Image (tube, rainbow, N blue to C red; front, top):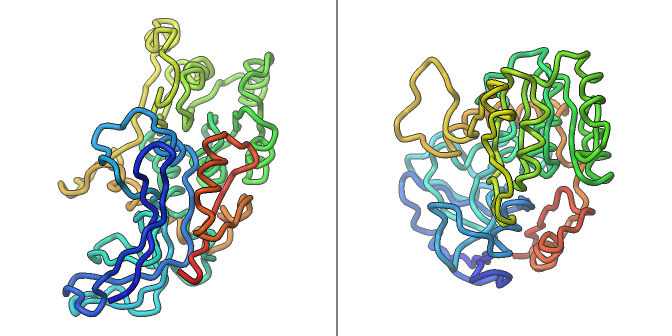
Length: 344
């Protein structure tokens, strides 16, 4: 038996580190045992869970685990596991915990040599950022505006130039705009800039914004997205619109914003809109993110994609509650936050 520590949310604001045990001596043939090295905070979604925003359909009841970005080292494998070996570094979408046992399918996934731990731990999140482009049928050379500069938004900003996009970042704080520039944004603007439309027109040489990637939940961010996208443009929505926000005070499909502009709204979930069939069992967000994860991991191994440049807080797992409290207070100094599981 192996001791395990895990983060469990019992209700709004009630986050606890609990102790448990795992039977690591009797792995099933298809199981893998992983010891966590580092996990990452997904600030927007984790904050919503922590503050008790209305539930997303399908979300588990309390108590429930939190987190979805875990990097660890394989400590044991079942007799039928062939693609992973003891000592391999792996990432998974499992929650914050010191060690875990999981069926060895596509998750956990092996981390290639050359990818630093503090970069690779963000691979699941950046794969979701990549899905924003691919689900919206992005074409190299297009102009892309990213609205909302949390982890997913900054990931979309970083991937844009690598995919061939000319990218402008829209945020609501100077700290986030600086982060966007660090990650390669060609331009970064405040979303409430009174000259926003004129600046975007100049940025796009008068052609308009081809694709808007919306990562922010508030309705004003959605409205901005519809206002700035060009006629016949697309808005890829990876946010949980309206979650934890005030009641809607405008028509989200107003003719002048949607119908008259012939805008395409795209839900960034599920698999790619590919011409080849996807396995029926691959549904939900994992269907798309796992498809893009190997590419994202290789970009990290090549040193051209480095989320670690934006790490503002490195905390021991015993300090996790502090990070969640800071996120609850919407502390703008937080960008990328990682938890060290040493000694767990």
